[in-house]
Length: 380
Image (cartoon, rainbow, N blue to C red; front, side, top):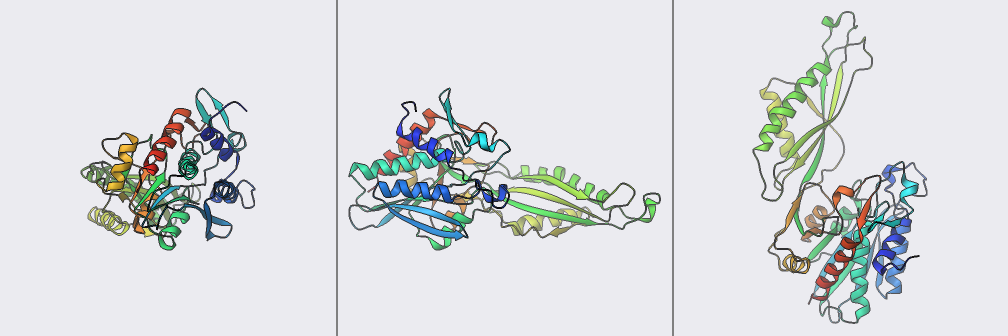
């Protein structure tokens, strides 16, 4: 192997270990699940003398915690919390063979978020091996499962784990410190009609036509209403009608039609409020549609005070004058709801996430590890 830095070698090892979220592969696929990643991270932690703990989340799936105790009695705690799972694509086998080219590391998870795992692990290991630990702050590397699907790992830790003064959630932010992100609510709306033969459509009532009018109102009037709202870091909330299903064949008037909606929310907005305002708008336009139960928990938005001392300390370590907001959601909001103020930070660019040639630059990876190490070394 070429003379790569320890950070790059670690990332190559991480990419080569499959950890595809089970939601994206058939049951029993050996590439599915985070267990192999948990084992590798645990081995790395044990070799460095860190206390290793597994937190069972679901059958065969566990968060992994590496604890670096302070010199004295622990009075504070900081979490470095990347997720261990990745998405999958048809070219997955090729992406599980990491490579370095043109100043980049290529492979599944290079950007989202094994680059963050490598940078955060490297920073914790550097402090552990230096012999100069913080005086009163416990440092915890928290590898989370299931971020790419249901956020089971962060939701579980938020209710069962120890709170901290700050969680730095690993996502590719281009080394910007993110204190706000949008939430996401998925909804289904259903319109009902009356079936009839296609030769005599006047005897039926077309549910697809009724839904077409609903879609028009949502994508025009409702979108315009949302554009009137604004958040200083996140801009306006959004709506997208992403799927529609209705009818069975051309010669039958459809008696049912369903659409799936993606509604990105701002801090302060709730699923109940979103449902209420959509229902009120449709009612005012004389349109009849009912909400269909999706049985999915909403992903809530994040808003953390950028003036918090530890947030400011991270900004100084990263050389940033101000914090940012992002449109995607992640594990930061569940951890924050559990009582731990949370920010998002990591090497890489979200534009490369989930792509068929996913990559992260060597420069960003190395810089991210150094920023995090600097932050950890300045903890009290």
